[in-house]
Length: 69
Image (tube, rainbow, N blue to C red; front, side, top):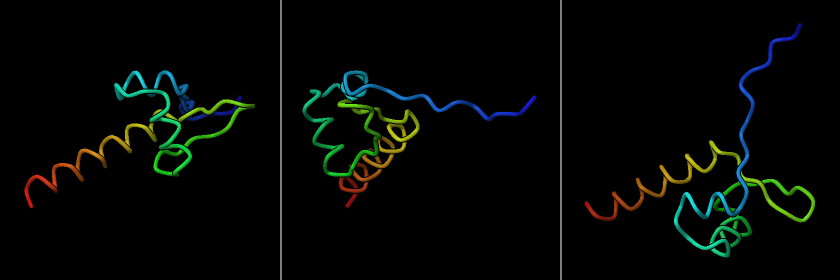
């Protein structure tokens, strides 16, 4: 029996858009620009859940830094 770590959860573009409360096109732009990491599965994309969390944290930090500057 092999030990496996926790499985990575992947989100669809529609799920990412719902979490971020933006359009799917905005998510596709972020993916194509390399700002949000994702993998291609056939003709669609999947975004690792932890990558979305990291992106949102960094975006919040950047926005917060701008407000205090």
